[in-house]
Every structure is written in C-alpha cells, then in structure tokens.
Amino acid sequence: MSDAETSRDATRLSVVIPVFNEADNVLPLLDEILEGLAGLGRLEVIFVDDCSDDDTVLRLSERLGGGVRLLRHDRRSGQSAAVRTGVRAAKAGWVATLDGDGQNDPADIRRLIEAAEADAEHPVMVGGLRLTRRAGWSKRFASVFANGLRSALLRDGCVDTGCGIKLFRRDVFLELPFFGALHRFLPALFRAYGHRVIYLPVNDRPRLRGQSKYGNLRRALIGILDLLGVYWLTRRVGPVPAVTEPGGN
Image 1 (cartoon, rainbow, N blue to C red):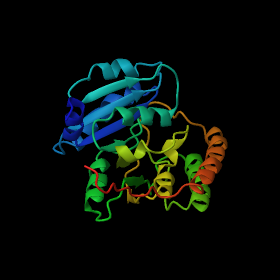
Image 2: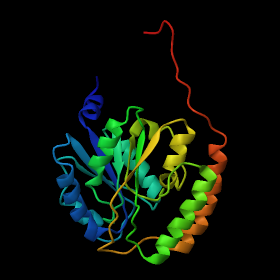
Image 3: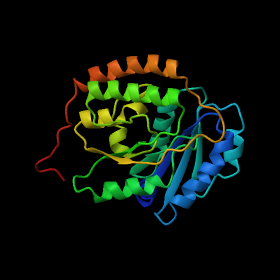
Image 4: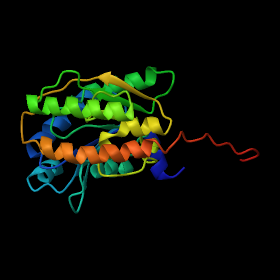
C-alpha cells in the first residue's frame, strides 16, 4: 500500500470549508470544529479559498499544520468548484462540508456521522435540514420558494438543499458530473445514481461577522437554469450497476 493510501485510510473524516472573504469567521469556525469533533479520530480540516481579497488567507496561515490545510484557487471559480477542490484533496473516505460564514454548527457533524453509521442500509450521504432558519424574511421566503420548486421537479425528498452542512462518501461524490451549482443539488444527484440519502435536522445560526455573498434575485435567476439542467440530467441517468469479474483475482 502506498503512503498516500495509508494516510487516506488512517484519516477518519475530512471537513471541507469553501471560503471567500471570511477573515473574521475562519478562526472561530476552526476552533469550533476542533472542539466539536475532538475524540472522533484522525481529522483534517481543509479550507479552500476562492481568491479572497481580505485577510482570510493571512488568518488561516497562522494555524496550518496538524491536520489544518489551506488550498487556494488562482481565479474565482465558485462554491461548487471549491467544494470539489477540497474533496479531491481529502484523505478520508467520508467528507463533511460546512459553509465558511459560521452559520452551520460544526457540532452537528458528529450527529451526521452517527446517523450514517446507525443506518443499516448504508447511505452515501446525510444531509442537514435547517428546520428553523435564522436568516432575514426575504431569504427565508426565497429559500422556501426555491426548495418547493426544486422538490416538485426533482422529487429528492429534501426540503433544504441549500444547507451547507452535509456528510458524504468521497468516492461517490467524485463520480458525479461536475457543474457550477453542483453543491446545491447533491441529494438529487446521489439519488438519481441509485444511492441512498437520508436527512437530519441541524442547527442554523445567524451570521455574526462579515457579509453575505449572495443576492436573492441573482441566486434565483441562476438557480432556475441550474434546476432545469439537473431535471434533464436526472431523467437520463440510472443506478450504477454492480460489477463482478468471474475468475478475477
């Protein structure tokens, strides 16, 4: 077994956090992750910086090492690309994602892991559901509308696909087709390819520092186009067949 394979086997969980201009949030979030997941086993925390122009990279540079990693894009590529960058670099077989704004509660990751391990049908993803939102009324309304439309078309059983806290298997994620809004449609895509997905209520917190990077109108216009594309895709794929090789070694 290669050194890379040994390292990947020994790391129980990789936590991937895409960030853009979150200088005031990254270190408090890192402290919460390390505290909330203490005792879980070997852990790595991967921040993926999507060309921040504030002090995000400088703050993180103070804490690198000991399982804390920083990857940087050379040009703005978006949140889905940042998630994929982190997952490709991850050493663990299971990956958890968190938004970099501090609104997801890192302590919920432990509950997602417990849910995945307790499910006898072996889900490849456990998605968080923010049943009580802490955002302003306009974002809550936009979220309810978008989730309702998406659920009606995709029938993925998810009432909150935009929740940033998710747990999934690295190998299965990397088999999915990539596009610019992939992170918002993971439940539908995993299910379309025949994989089991379950959901768990998680905590949602108000943003305490920094500014939101998304406007409701811009998100809605782009989201509708992405939704139609995912609807087309999920109607044209089927479960991946199991493969055996009689007589193989």
